[in-house]
Image 1 (tube, one colour):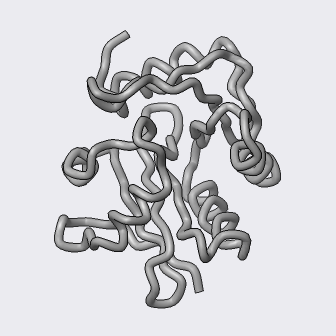
Image 2 (cartoon, one colour):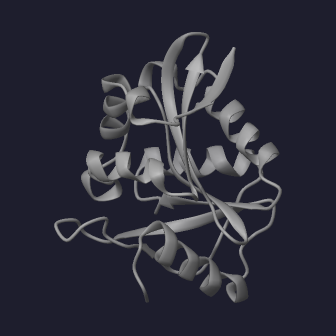
Length: 176
């Protein structure tokens, strides 16, 4: 049975969770581990571990913002992919979010990026057509061209500016 268990203190953060996080995201698309751990104290940040029975198989981090829930990082251990786990996790997040759900995906320049977009489209997400850059997580990292996807409704251009402002200000802690 798939369960999401919220991380409420640093003692719960295991090496297995750290490896899933670091192995699943490219250098420029993830925070440094200490910074990631420090976010547990942020009132808008929620980190959930994904368990299949008693086995840790993934992570999903979200931000509760004024107008939407933002999925920042979502990863399932490679050996568990393709088994419907990701679908169950995202559906649970959608069901618990009383408002729009937004996430970033890589621009579809390779097969993995295409599969990821198709996965979210099957769950009812739509791709925003506005150009979006994920800000660098630190001075030694690069900004990354991404796409924003949303559920249940597509992000309109008129909403895009405010969503981007909230992401930059709260999640990435920069002012634009």
